[in-house]
Length: 530
Image (cartoon, rainbow, N blue to C red; front, side, top):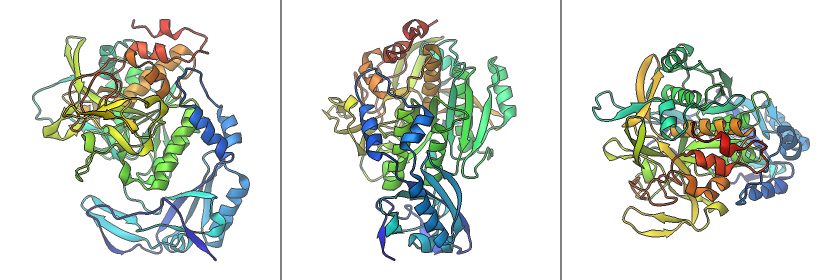
């Protein structure tokens, strides 16, 4: 039977890792195959139309979306026959997510996908992986767009920074106090659901009861959804996944009281990340209007197929009227890489994500007196941002310029990151509770749920979701709180958009300016500071 290499599936070993042996042939694994969309050309055209600089909402209901842009049953049947022929079992199928999950042994998967799987070891652990591209039989050409999960290396890191217990300088605020600094006191989001994507860790209800009791706020309704057998499982690592989970929940729920919080736990793999996002945006039961993602990694750490699959999922969210807020990263303009070049984080760099960068706030009492781009060189933390190497310049960023730290300015040529910003510095961090202890946290992982919560409040006030806000926000650029001081290593904060704080930090006028024209209530009146 003739085969072909699956474009974009190529893998290289993680830097510093080495193969120690072949993977156990009897090991059980699950693999996600993504199938092409029905009406793929129409989907692409609809996604392009989202980038118009106007305020006319373009949204599809979940049922309408599934009927128009789900997978074709004939394609799924071809995939199922391929799996059966290779001894693999179809354990899950979702037409709207275009996902077919198959299970089997390593030996069966190696034969099916024409690849040799190895056990790799590196400083932080081990993983199962492959080198080179996967192969598929000719009947799957054009039918299968991605095969994810064979390589189970950690795909992303949480963008959280805990303040050192020995740090003497700095201030700390509750999430509600941060919102009030930006002019959003006493907001609420009744009827809204905020989705949180988590690739590890967990939350303890006792911590939530204690934390919100201290704040004098109602304990939020938090629901855990298992994706790919992952679950709410606190690890005891406050500086890692547990801190990420609790930061997300506590910021989102404190800034948007009365909102439902749904946490989607998935394995930290390319398959897990994509499956978590598609599960959240197509969740008919909980129907989130906003998604917050605090995880990511440099664009170069992704295979082309995985990056395209997740970008496609974010485009689907935009068409459904779901806003997706993504942390831009905590390693400045090089995103933690030491190759001498500037890099941005993905999925923040997707044009369909609202990329959230970081600042440091200065206050006098309860008043915001100053704000600079977040950069703590001694601690290695800084707002992620710059220019993508993978995504073209969106129309709503046309004409923008990128200012380097030396003062040189050049036209922005590719997708610029971030779009917006807010407080992320551990030195002006958020008071949260993790694993039974009160800590102060920062990182752009705090910014994504803050913006998600503010957007949820705006949705509730307007009576309709803002949805894909990027074109609306850029059209309303003057309504942001502009940050013009500081840098993130490679890029300087400047007037207007820049590569470390984007358009700036939140101000109530932003939501009034970005509200869609068909909203019956008047968001300009309802979103004014109280």
